Image: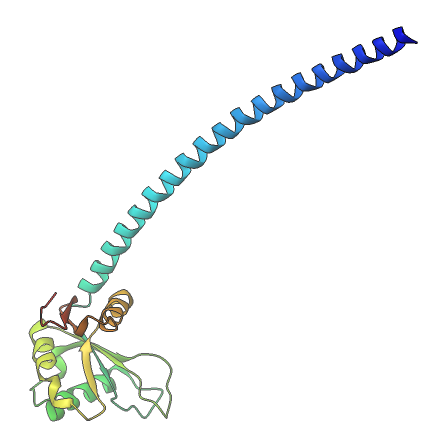
Length: 197
């Protein structure tokens, strides 16, 4: 009986040693695999960070390019339209009339490259108009004269990209900012202390 117990103990010990050895080997393999995965993840994270930087640079350059293409353009809001089938020529005539009468700036149809409404027609709300001028100086004259529209419900502003509009709005909502504006697509703020940035 003692021999059997001794043999049984010996077999159990050997089996335990074999199992421990297999587990240690498996743990070693898993640790190696885990180290390789950590290195791969770190490498991927570094790649992602680099790609995000490149993406930001590309998006910024794209935004600058898009804004440059809008240098001769303005938007007018609050100018009523009465038809959903307004043609480009009709829109140009409306803008010419508006600029001549309301802003007292002599503009002709030939000064405008193109003008059109944005969005779907709504009889209760006027659509914005985008106007692209042949020469930038006409745009500047109109931008300078837009103060005359105060209180009329009509507004003239630069045709900014969506990103620049968002930046300008975000800047305006900051507590330290008194006012925000744009000049030729460049964004500016006037801080509460009077400094311009």
